[in-house]
Image (cartoon, rainbow, N blue to C red; front, side, top):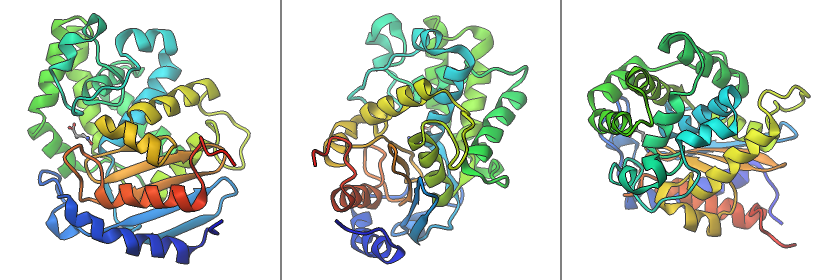
Length: 313
Ligand code: GLN
């Protein structure tokens, strides 16, 4: 079996970079443009604490949809599984991540799952705190803790752009208000928290540590302290496997075979239970919102390192 090393990760990056030409970089995120098309950073952190990394692994990029995992973890801790899944479903959908039409047809008109935009706006309404500032600070403190990086913070320019370009998210929030998923007091605050957490700057090392935290069932490496209950971590990883790559989750499940979550900045977090966390940045994304080069890197890593959780050796 392939042995993990920095040289091996460098080879993976080299082999996958050309796949970026199949995708394009979103044009509304400040700091991200076509000059980043072929960027690719891949970082692995193992549960033994070893780090293997190559490519543009020091570039900061915005958290975007990976923040949906944080919102779900915190909502589960704050309100418990029963209440959370009264407001949001746990089923995959074949629609795009920002679909509004699917809010009309699902059971009780609630979002299909917490890893699409409508679902994450709904979970953002279930974060405890007396103001959006306090709720955001709780989320940020939690992200800093699980990535062991106190410097992580929100990028103001990205936040302004999320708000400016947030008409679709506003529509989702108000649609959910109209059907009673959100109350009129909740919708604006949930939307603002969602835009803020999307705008946090992060790099592939921090993402790999986040993946590792999930792989380690809600504990930091080397710590016995349970920061999130193992049951909630298990729930989140199951939903990442079925819905973390949006309407491409099925093929990633087959070809990669472990929990993943992507964002439109081209970032991906992966969690190989009991083994490692993977952080990827590859800004060229496909029409479904997933990194082209990053997706290929995951397929190669899974094959070479036998990471598929359904692997029968
Ligand atoms: N900020 C983006 C949005 O709200 C995030 C979507 C994504 O990463 N897929 O639409």
